[in-house]
Image 1 (cartoon, rainbow, N blue to C red):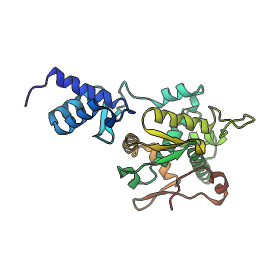
Image 2: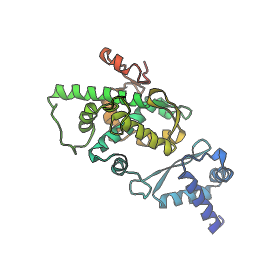
Image 3: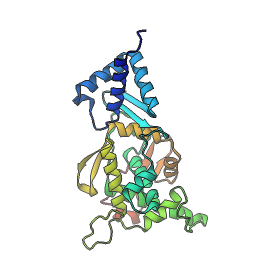
Image 4: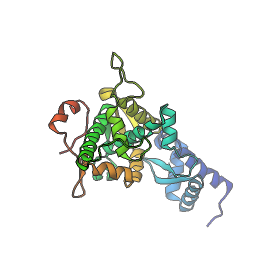
Length: 274
């Protein structure tokens, strides 16, 4: 094989830099498109680009015309965004990190409610701010019922991990705030969801499509790849175990709301599947 030249290394690094610009579409940038084509057609160049990404603490999820060079940050990468840092940027109260984490988890679960949706490259998920809030509140009721049955319905420590610590805080928090005109406050649950989807939009994972339901969004190919990467995490499994997202024979569907939930969730825009 021909020796690697400084120009090859520069091109590989350039491709990785494009991958770090999630809103940049390969179809709209000629250089990006040419480097993607070279990656797909030139195995030594592809290995070089992968090595550059690895050296930066990045994991290459996919390289394709639809997603570009989709990368995610490894846990020890300088590009990693940690939930604690994210929560501190968006909220003064550090205990709200549970709520921010739960909001992101719920967006992912609603965007791709079935395994086949997550596996289908052509599937586009749709979520709304009010829908995510309604979904989490339904999950909160499930958790409360389970805690009552097990005799565990006592307040946990504020720094306890997992959904069990978060649901009580979410359930007690106002959906929109206490203003007379019901404006959405930053610390309300819909305010927290709005920050989550705004962050995902800025990161190139969601695209805003309208104002209904507190704001509606559609998923991008990059977000699908990210959710695939996190689908096996303990937090996602914990949410699935609630029965809010039911998994039976390999397919999954969101459990329809109970009768008492119907009024509250009627306008939430939840993508329930039968």
